[in-house]
Length: 161
Image (cartoon, rainbow, N blue to C red):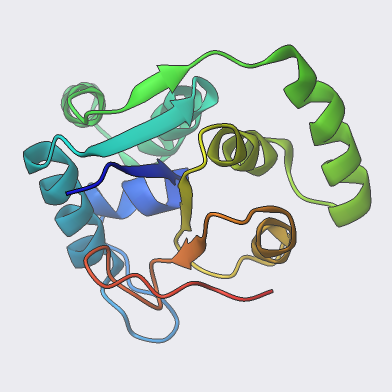
């Protein structure tokens, strides 16, 4: 099997820890848990992410948990995911500013997109978000943009801008 490279937006990881359904009725939690199972079992799947993913996930987990023990347990489980956290490349910042200005996409989403572009990886997002990142990613990234609400990890169907 050939190596499969992926970048997962926070919105794809969060449903593995907190129950979520998409507007179209898709069970995002079930799909996210299957992604975790796939990356845990298959060494040919390489998951990359900028370090900001840690901050984003911890921030969401803090907002969604009431007990400190639950927060710590969830964050510990997240850190068990086989994700290679990669440093920013100097030129990402300059490119990111262009994408933010032109597409009005949020910086954290743009960092994920820059990572997917750098590593020639599939870019997974939970759904077509109002901030326009999916359209920007479809326009800029030629290694596939996938919406968790529209497909599963084992049967990816590219999104279109």
